[in-house]
Structures are given as structure tokens and as C-alpha cells.
Image (tube, rainbow, N blue to C red; front, side, top):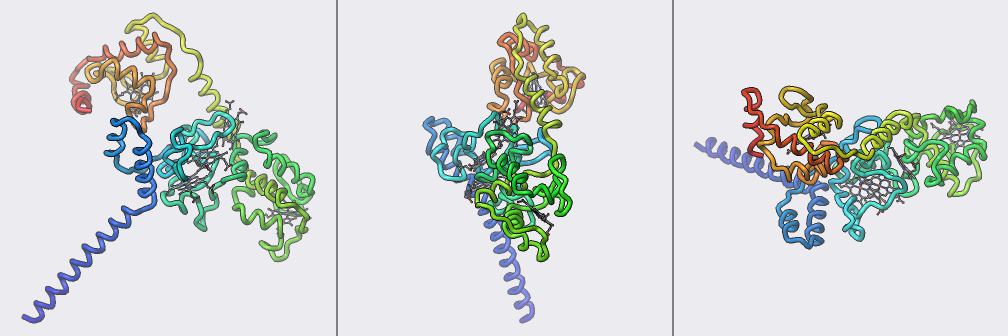
Length: 372
Ligand code: HEC
Ligand code: HEC
Ligand code: HEC
Ligand code: HEC
Ligand code: HEC
């Protein structure tokens, strides 16, 4: 009898521990940093909203991980920085505290939506705590580039001869010659010094601190260093560090940047007016490459939804608004923005409204999406 009772107590305690343990995990999870910042942002946005409808919407919105998938520039990247830096493209957040503040103006045209954040800032795009995301943990070789050091990030897409907007980078490249670094170090297509190690990819290999040390006090990182200690001002060391950090042997300019510019020019070309009709709508649909992603009556791609019975699902107003700004209706939409003339917009809308061909094949499609 006694043993049974003891067993029961042990059992009870074990169960209690399990529940408490689970509770703790859930609690910790709830408290993770990104949640803290997301709800901070939502609270602030609610305070700033003057429209009661928007206020209500923000009140009911749950915290969530926000991410940008950047495919244009080099390797595909997933940037979740906007989970915490949620106000970057909101002009109402100019005077908000960090990390919610509106992003400062950067020279040139870089849409934050298309560029993401790590394209300029490096860091760890997937990170959800400040330490992880900013790449401050010991083993991450690409910590956040910030302040003046961000110029090292600009060089990925704006290499030598460097932009005037990146003055420290230019100064660093100049000092590399003036201070005789080039005499000992090889950098592909810049110099061919042989006494020191090759520096063509040095920015990929080392973080800022190591680079500074190697320049200021060569022996710090290698006891028997041959490299002379040089008399450099703080400003010169910074410029050299930015220059070295930018060296990565990575040619985005002739690959993805060239493609991006070409694509953007294609998107931005002035659309022509067409006669308003279902037939011109069909031509618009074909000429803008919609078929690459959408199927109508068995023809086309599968990236976006089948549109064979789309005319039964949406109104003309919805369709026009969706074309003008897909993300205003579908948050996080991956559909590209197109530029339409007024008559193109009207025609493609008519064409889509005319898609009502309910067949055995597409009845199932209608059934599954009609409720949205
Ligand atoms: C978990 C929330 C969180 C995430 C995720 C996050 N940040 Fe931050 N960030 C902050 C906070 C808080 C600050 C302000 C305080 C600080 O510097 O630590 C900040 C500051 C910054 C600063 C200014 C630093 C300075 O000292 O001037 C930059 C630049 C920045 N973040 C970029 C990024 C980038 C790029 C990413 C994604 C790779 C990112 N952040 C992801 C919370 C976050
Ligand atoms: C991932 C690539 C990428 C990065 C990183 C980048 N840019 Fe750009 N930048 C572009 C592209 C693409 C254009 C558009 C060029 C065009 O339309 O001709 C551009 C345009 C510019 C322009 C307009 C003048 C010109 O040469 O076209 C300036 C100035 C500029 N960027 C400055 C910067 C600065 C400063 C940084 C760093 C803070 C930076 N960029 C980082 C890709 C990049
Ligand atoms: C085209 C390059 C570029 C891109 C893309 C970019 N930034 Fe920046 N960012 C800059 C520059 C330049 C500065 C100013 C550097 C400085 O003087 O501190 C800056 C500054 C910042 C700061 C400090 C702002 C302050 O108020 O002190 C934060 C935070 C930041 N960026 C976050 C982000 C986040 C989050 C993203 C992605 C949504 C992003 N950045 C994308 C170039 C860029
Ligand atoms: C007399 C030759 C000589 C000159 C001049 C010289 N270096 Fe070096 N440097 C070396 C040698 C040799 C090493 C190899 C590692 C060591 O001995 O520390 C080195 C190492 C380095 C490293 C570390 C690289 C790594 O991967 O660990 C950096 C960064 C560096 N030098 C930058 C510079 C800069 C910037 C200048 C100009 C201000 C410069 N060096 C001038 C000889 C030289
Ligand atoms: C790169 C692929 C892609 C291209 C090109 C594309 N779309 Fe889409 N479209 C999508 C995706 C993905 C969705 C699904 C929802 C979302 O992410 O927005 C979508 C959704 C739609 C919808 C349904 C929206 C709703 O009511 O739910 C319509 C209508 C549409 N696209 C029309 C077009 C037209 C017209 C074109 C050409 C001018 C076009 N799409 C080009 C990917 C694409």
C-alpha cells in the first residue's frame, strides 16, 4: 500500500514538472526578442494611426515573423530584419525610437523591398534575436556593416572606380597604393606584391576587428609578422579597413546587377494605349508574360493560381486594384508589379472577368478557391 502511495506522489510530481517545464518553454518562446519588437511596433503604429478602421485592424493583428526573399542579387537570401525594423519604409516613423525608425535616405534608387537588408548591411538575414541577426555571435563572419563601414557593402554592386557617395572606400583604395601596401600584397587586377598574403578575398575571410588589428599592429594576429608597423591616422586605418572589407571577389555587376537594371528598364517602359476589349486584354495577358505563371484553360504556368474561372471569383474593382498594387490586397504577394496604360488595365480586367469556363477539369479549382 505504502509503495503505491509513494508511486503516486512521484507520478504526480513528475506530471507537475512536465507541465511546468512545458509552460516555461512556451513562456520563453513567447518572450523571444522578435515578439517583443513586433508588438512594440504594432503598439506604436496603433498610436500613430488616425483612422479608426486602421486602428481596429492593427489591434486585431497578431505578431508575426516578416521576411523578404531576395533573389535578384547573387545567392538567394531570406531577410527577416523587418520583423523588428518594421517601420523602415513607413514615413510616419521618422521620429520613432530604434529599431522602428524610418530608414535614412540612401543615395541612388534602391527599393528596400527588392534589395532586402543584407545586400548592403550583411548580418544574418534569418536571425530573430539582435545578436544573431546582427551577426555578433562569434562564428558569424559577416557581422552587420553600419555607420561608415556600410561603404564596404556598397562596393559589391558599385566596385572600382568607386562611387563619389562612398568617399572612405575611395580613400582606402588610394591609401593602399600610397602606403605601399600594394608592394607586398597582391589584389587581383590591382597589385601583384608577393611578400605578404594575397588580399583578393580578404573581406570575406575576416571581420572588421581583425582587419583593423592587422593594419595597426601587424604582430597582434601573427607573432612573427614581417609586415611593418605603419604610421597611420585613425581615419586612414578606417578607410583601409573599409577598402579591405570590400574585397570579396564577387562580381554582381556584370551578372545580377546588369540583369536587374535591364529588367527594371523593361518594366518601366511606357505602356501603350490599346483599344478596350476582351481581345486586347488577351494580348496584354500574353505580352506581359502573365502566362509564365498563370494557367487559363490548360495553357500556362503554375506559379500563380489557375485563372480559368476567375471571372466568377472577383469583381472588376478588385481586379483593377490587384493589378495596380497586388500587395495592397494580398500581403506578402509574390506577384510582380507591372505598369499598365489605362486601356490596358481595363482590357486585361475585361479579359479576366470573361474567364468563367466551368469545366470538369477546373470545377475543382473553383471549388477550392471560391471561399477566399
Ligand atoms: C530581434 C530584433 C532585431 C532584428 C531581427 C534585427 N535588428 Fe537591427 N536593431 C535592433 C535593435 C533593438 C537596434 C537598436 C539597438 C542596437 O543597436 O542594438 C537595432 C539596430 C540596427 C542598426 C543600427 C546599428 C547602429 O549601431 O547604428 C542597423 C544598421 C540594423 N539594426 C540592421 C539590421 C539588419 C540588417 C538586420 C537583419 C539582418 C537586423 N538589423 C535585424 C533589433 C533587431
Ligand atoms: C545589391 C546591389 C547594390 C548595392 C549593395 C548597392 N547598390 Fe547602389 N545601385 C544598385 C543598382 C542596381 C542601381 C541602379 C543603377 C541604374 O538604375 O542604372 C544603383 C544605383 C545607385 C546610385 C545612382 C547612381 C548610379 O551609379 O546608378 C547611387 C548613388 C548608389 N546606387 C549608391 C549606393 C550606395 C551608397 C550603396 C551602399 C550604401 C549602394 N548603392 C549599394 C545596386 C546596389
Ligand atoms: C542600398 C543599401 C541599403 C539597404 C538595402 C538597406 N540599408 Fe540600412 N542603411 C544604409 C545606409 C547607407 C545607412 C546609413 C549609414 C549610417 O550612416 O549609419 C543605413 C542605416 C540603417 C540603420 C540605422 C538608422 C539610424 O536611424 O541610425 C538601420 C537600423 C538600417 N539601416 C536598417 C536597415 C534595414 C532593416 C534594411 C532592410 C529593410 C536596410 N537597412 C536596407 C544602406 C542600406
Ligand atoms: C613589407 C611588406 C608589407 C607591407 C608594406 C604591408 N604588408 Fe600586410 N602583410 C605582410 C605580410 C608578410 C603579411 C602576412 C602575415 C603576417 O606576417 O602577419 C601581412 C598581412 C596582412 C594582413 C592580414 C591578412 C590575413 O589574411 O591574415 C592584412 C589585412 C594586411 N597585411 C594589410 C596591409 C595593409 C593595409 C598594408 C598597407 C597599409 C600592408 N598590409 C602593408 C607584409 C606587408
Ligand atoms: C512571376 C509569376 C507571376 C506573374 C508573371 C504574374 N503573376 Fe499573377 N499571381 C502570381 C502569384 C504567385 C499569385 C498568387 C497570390 C499572390 O502571391 O499574390 C498571383 C495572383 C494573381 C491573381 C489572383 C489574385 C486574387 O484575386 O487572388 C490574378 C488575377 C493575377 N495574378 C493576374 C496576373 C496578370 C494579369 C499577370 C500579368 C500582367 C500576372 N498575374 C502575372 C504570380 C504571377
